[in-house]
Image (cartoon, rainbow, N blue to C red; front, top):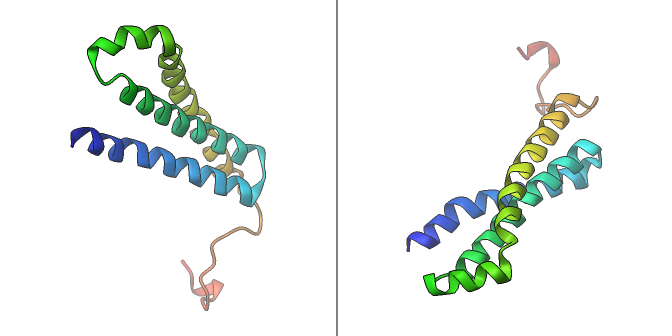
Length: 116
């Protein structure tokens, strides 16, 4: 039960960030949104790969054999997550600070003079 809760707590937010990055790129098609989509996609894929490897190495006797077969996944998932969170967050920050003209939130029916 704890393993399923661990997957739910960690994997679902990463996959949600990946989906948000992809949707953001589909809407705006800029370098900043591409970096956000690639970064958050790297996080989602690296954690999914890490969980799949964790399920494959479920017993201690399979660990030594698995290191020889899929040993490359440990550094890839570790550094993929770190690089992904940096690239994704900086891309999202760049997109947010860029401030495209004409893309501001408007309140329907409100007059500009009455807004604070």
